[in-house]
Image 1: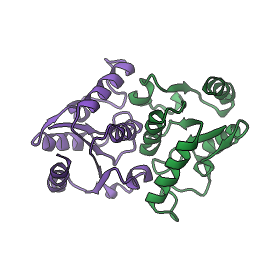
Image 2 (image 1 turned 180 degrees about the vertical axis):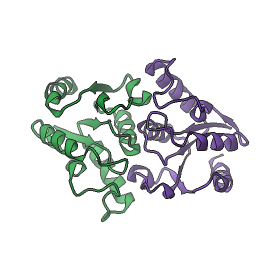
Image 3 (image 1 turned 30 degrees about the horizontal axis):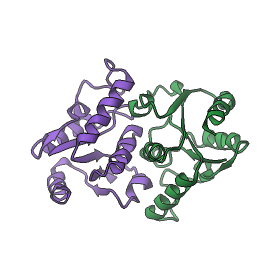
Image 4 (image 1 turned 90 degrees about the horizontal axis):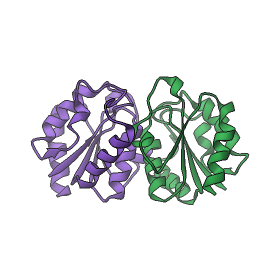
Length: 139
Length: 139
């Protein structure tokens, strides 16, 4: 099982520690292709050693070979929204994880989209059953 | 010429007045299908009178019938990122307008994507030649 985890990078890194905890959880179920999304050293400026064209090409290649896409969507991000739509176009099962406690409402393009599964949670401890339910139907 | 203008709604409304000015400019060149994106009354909570499924269905119908998509991408937004990827999948010409002066770097999924045209600007006064260049090649 190859898992593409999507989280905000240039949209803001306030949830980076949470992304790391989610990636650790997801690694129990398969190979997380995008481990760098949780990296402490990854700043909002992004991966400065790689040109944008190389990041785009690498991430689209990972997305194409992923079996499922799991996105943390509490921090608005163009990249995450873009990846979700591409995953949908590629026919990948997509799980969007949203924390209503942040005070933000999820975009209608995600929350109102019948092709996606959107789930609310507040703490990483709640995610295990949500992820297991998703993966059991996504296989 | 039908123009789909995309700007942040639930991602944050700090640029709503700018969106209005861009929509006024775009209306010189065609019909802007998404005029509500510039509305002063539209809060980050979105269009409360419409369920998310109805917003999604309406916006995807507009995107499908649009000739071009023009997105203001200075405020991170899942919805705008999603719409850009869907427009690309539908073969629509896409122009992304970014203000580096906000201090934000544009997502690599947009800036590094060879299928999109991304242009920097700071003031709405600079947009006329950018929009005209884009529309002249998009026809």
